[in-house]
Length: 298
Image 1 (cartoon, rainbow, N blue to C red):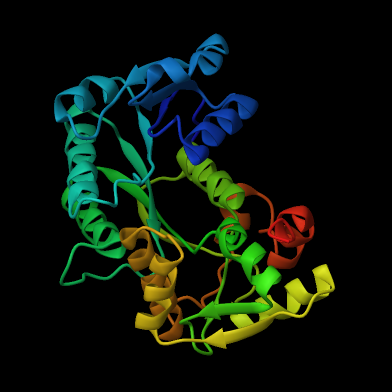
Image 2 (cartoon, rainbow, N blue to C red; image 1 turned 90 degrees about the horizontal axis):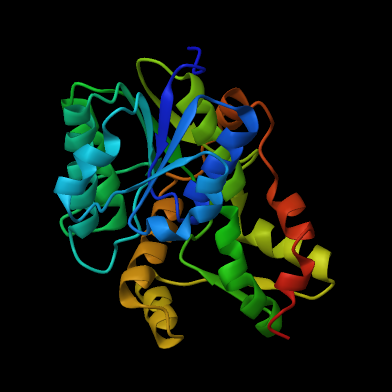
């Protein structure tokens, strides 16, 4: 652990959900001087008014990055959402790692994903795997946070599932330990403030759940029957695309289910509490607070 009171702390992607929330949490804890980096600095006037230094950083333009990162001691590198173009996100991440090292950043906290592995084609999980390797090959100290799938993502599929009475997945009988975005953000802030050296943490919820478990929880909360139906991965992907999900997103979501079916997603750790100071939120508790959203498709 380290005292961050004299550190200048930088958060990338500060216009996004996790980035903005991370800056808010840092403001609450007065954790050193704060820098918010974003492609759209004009959207962060509210943070600027609170004393946060706002800098422009475009991960597609490496020339902006070293200047944006200069003077920062510790940096939260939030993985970008550039998934539509193959290898674009990985290039962005590599640009950021090189710039952080050149700018003299001492410690980088990176938001990765559970069980990153290389894939023959460009993919979300492949990006994380090679970004981790870029950090490992650098001269930086780092903390890698392998976030499980967000509990929040359940709200993308469950309202329609509740309306139809059917929850589809390609997870088979595999279990997944969902974790909320809030818990991931609080864990990232905890690591950003105090982590030292080089370490990897799996960021999980309190307990793995199968999709049968999720269906049972939703049925109990809504009072409506919901059955889980296991599909082959190809069928799930085609169904999502047919429902209007962009192919790159359907590929990513299907890959998450395949990883779950293979047993990669059922781990459980105490990292959230260790880093954030509070236990992770259970799926049941998260969904109980979102009843209106669960029934919004009816």
